[in-house]
Length: 325
Image 1 (cartoon, rainbow, N blue to C red):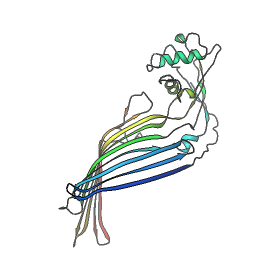
Image 2: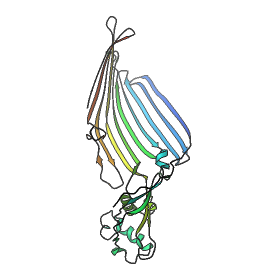
Image 3: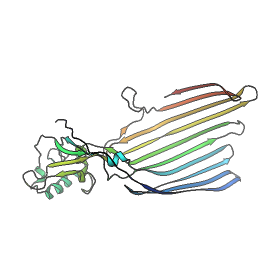
Image 4: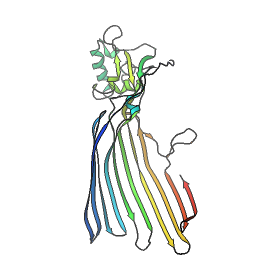
């Protein structure tokens, strides 16, 4: 192997977007038996990007308060994130990588159930007489290019939440909310190596995929089927899952002589957080891991932040904070 560097092209790009959005709120019941308040709502956003085309995001939500002191709420929504300028139009430059060909007879059985048949069809179309004995004996770095990917599509998320709000009438100024959340992101943008791109090409149910388009093989001749070049860049290959509980407690105590005291507690319980870097890969558990020394994001199981404020008149007398994770 070796390291090579080539001058990169200038990075530039642009896109425009047109959007239409609307929101609807329907109060169904009010001050009724077992329905102090009942309402549903929804929202939708249509977008048309010059880069990725049309996208749609929407949500549905509802709130039911059987009595004034307690209410239940929930949402279900879909969201999108369009790729940014760097992901789409990042400067192209040359790069070199060593690739162990997944269609080589030594590796063809290592992939998914589709790899062997896909390699047979792919190599046969390129003039390889016996694909089952195909072997790339080269030990060289292959020249390719890396940079942005203008063929990216949007990331997609599905989210649902369910929660409760407590505002007891016998404890004025007190509010407690607790919401369970579940978020799944698919087609997330991630950069993979040329080796992984070559594997993903033949590990799908069809050869007509974005990965095969990034790998160029020799057609005919003594090196028929050999990988000649590749293109690496961001691809819509990753996915994320997370779920947990958010809690927010707020209590405001007003007194005539001593002033106003405010207590705020924000907490989170992380139930799960996993990441799949490429299709077919084992999930990476990001929950309860991380550190400060290596720069990783800390994802503790429990987090809490407490703020206590004392204010008299227009003057802030004291503020104390505490955080734990």
